[in-house]
Length: 241
Image (tube, rainbow, N blue to C red; front, side, top):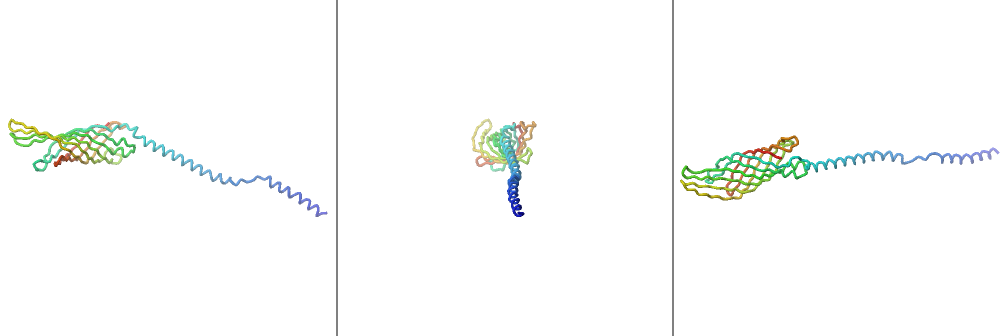
């Protein structure tokens, strides 16, 4: 009898225990997965923000040249010593030379901040003269140099100074007048001209936004006209807008 009662109690307790196990909350295995995914989402968000900031910075740099108040066009007066090669094979004839030139900083068309400061070109006219002979018989010769010369400049850090090298072409117009007592004979001619040289150039700003600048330079330039070679050592000063 006792055994029957124990068996009945056991048969009733087993379903109750099973039911109590079924009612217990089932743990979610992916709770830990969500906790691990949270840092990844934060990292992806930070990477997205960083990429957006970099794109915005690149966009600003690309469009910076459109906001440049300085157009890059200006003019200069120049003067200095011209060493004319003597046609008589007597070395050089030192003479004063002066002229004017127009400068265009065409590198400002380039979006890159560094490259846009490197390139410019000059269109120049320079003049000198020479007299040879005696009081009764002499020759007056006038030399006109017309050149177009692109240049590449290398800025000195963040300063307004730079060094440059230049190559150009043009022509030399020479007009001579030969005087013999009261007689005069005029002779003129044109020769192809090749120019090359180096120099140091400065562009300090006059106005804070840089829309107006003073330009100055010191230069050493060679002119090849036919079989003759002339050397110019001089300086220039002007304004750049």
